[in-house]
Amino acid sequence: MLNPTFTAPDLTTFTNLDGLGLTAIGQHLSAAKAEILCHVTNPIPWCQTCGAAGIPRDTVTRRLAHEPLGWRPTVLVIKHRRYRCANCQRVWREELSQAVAPRQKISRTGLRWALVGLVCHHLSVSRIAEGLGVTWNTANEAVLAEGQRLLIDDPTRFDGVKVLGVDEHVWRHTRTGDKYVTVIVDLTAVRDGTGTARLIDMVPGRSKAVFKTWLADQEEQWKQGIEVVAMDGFTGFKTAAVEELPHAVEVLDPFHVVKLGSEALDQTRQRIQREQHGRRGRKDDPLYKCRRTLTTGLSLATEKQKTKLEDLFKEPEYEPVQLVWSVYQKMVDAYRQPKPEVGRWALEQLINEVGTKVPKGLPELKKLGGTLRRRKTDILAYFDHIGSSNGPTEALNGRLEHLRGIALGFKNLAHYIARSLLETGGFRRRLHPQS
Image: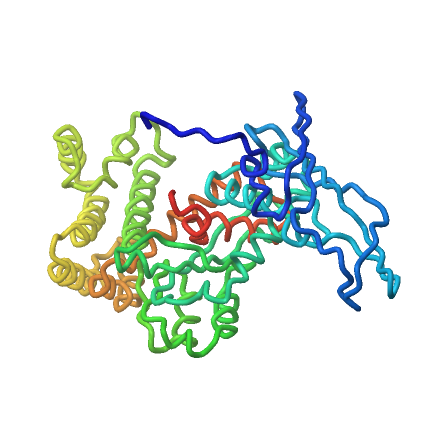
């Protein structure tokens, strides 16, 4: 701005008091905090019961935590006048509902600042409490209550959900107590290419009954709108979806399908290692040295890695590992096909082959074939619904891990669920459209 036009300083506007119905009339600054003296801009000096004029009785002072200025805690010192009705003798105070919610110690602007800090800037409650100059409990209770009222309790929060993702999540790492929750995610924007995944609910426990009960509690019209349910290999989620959403398509995402092949490969390698050497692998054992290379996609392997595999498979005792490795590579290659119909055909042929023609002495491959055969429809459904993968759900779980790290862990599950919904519930743009 080359030629700025300056106006007279306005403390009311600078401190965002005009939206609270307050006017700043003084200030006191110290190294620890800033205090803004203010009064109600438009008081109501007449009785709301009989309409008679009120007689000023006295003035009380109310202190509210406000959004910090330059990270210096700011306090609103409100000169709050009381009146007595000359007719009915009723006593009332000037109205402050525009500035603060009932029984709150933080102004509405301060709450908004705290909620944006929590949702958009990933601040901890401790940092928010420090900025507001209040205790942790005061900040936590106020911010969660405001987030619940403004965002989580929004009746339109579930609107437009067409693709569901469901997965389990570990919310705490302790030896005692239930540490699992079931997360339900909206993947519609991911499939349509219009946005990211968002958490819509989190339920204590992980079982078929948990997911089935949650689905049963939803409105029938909403359930009829669900087209796809993306999930991992847990059969409980599968049966719950079939029973409650019989019209929806269940999709087993590529990550978990490939993981099944990777686990079968690792188990075969470990079994052959024990059979050949009578112990677990050591750093100089050929199988142990190739453990990472074996699970690398062949199209991404370097020449050195390919040479290492060729040398390994020259040994006849490692033939079982080579057979399972070849199945694993075909699984990876099917998902990497540029055309979905080609990938679907390749994976279907592989499932039919592994599900029926498994050489003897390969229990890991037989188990893998049985799993692929049972979930064949869900696995192949991915190619008909590209974008409806549970991968974004796994990524969202990673964000929740980060949230738990910021807070140094949670003890209260209700607080964790509320914080998780605020952190990953898609509220960022609603609170901070510029982000």
